[in-house]
Picture: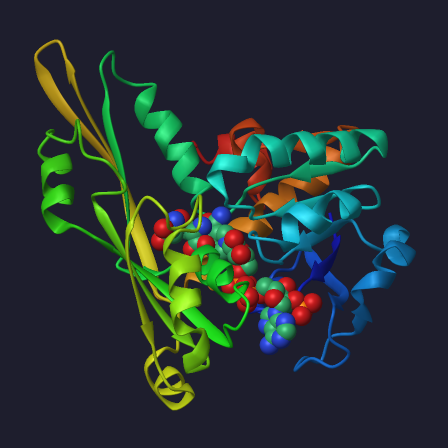
Length: 319
Ligand SMILES: NC(=O)C1=CN([C@@H]2O[C@H](COP(=O)(O)OP(=O)(O)OC[C@H]3O[C@@H](n4cnc5c(N)ncnc54)[C@H](OP(=O)(O)O)[C@@H]3O)[C@@H](O)[C@H]2O)C=CC1
Ligand SMILES: N[C@@H](C[C@H]1CC(C(=O)O)=NO1)C(=O)O
């Protein structure tokens, strides 16, 4: 299958999806849809407002836009015209997003795989797997130390923020407790701190700090520190986007302890997120080709559809 792909949004994630599509022999890039007229790419660039004109040229549209505002405002409109994949990661509003995408996709015989990536995404899959194994599971998720793209996107939406990033730091003793089977009672909010670096005018600092630290869903429950730095410091100290994390599940099986851990160590958060997104793009094209429509979470997509191999090939190699 040769999958014709489009990319909406040419930020960290969009550039990483473009790179990966260029490396894979079952995809070809139709073009990039952006709010900006010129981008640093050799690919064809189209105005994002014109995307619907190319609905018959694209098999899968990768929505590489921000989750804080872009996805809620734009994604369902794309699902009316395209089979889509997104990385929506406002966990408290995933059900709302799924319902909107399901309605738009079903009405137009499209597939929409939502909230791909690693959290939500691969971590979601491993949380379900871990919880399914034990009568009384104890499960904890930890992120970092690293740069959260979703939280960084969220701070960049605050008026007056010229540049911004957010780092997530887990408490090592909490991770140790979880690994020892003592994770019950640990909370994600007390097991992590969030550090934000912002470039903004001094007159706006107090307001920006207040807006960030009280931001629902992203920062409000956490211990969050906001630093204001010069553009030169930002340029010097805040390049790259490493990240990672752990899903740790422990339980007792007839008096025998078991510990299940899924971990990620990422030099580049956007490149890894793109890898998960493109694998689900392959699955989206296949689901559509099989005559399906509507929204899918990563939990509803048969795993073999992500692979470049067929199920038969995987069985013949012994799984
Ligand atoms: N589920 C998961 O595990 C993960 C999810 N994500 C999600 O991915 C989302 C996108 O992340 P990321 O790519 O880092 O966000 P970016 O801020 O880099 O890009 C988001 C959008 O901003 C616009 N943009 C980017 N650069 C510029 C610029 N210089 N000037 C003007 N506009 C710009 C782009 O649109 P345009 O080209 O039209 O200007 C782009 O679509 C995050 O919000 C996060 O929610 C990320 C990582 C993991
Ligand atoms: N969605 C996250 C992926 C992980 C990282 C994270 C955090 O640091 O809080 N939560 O989930 C991202 O945008 O990077």
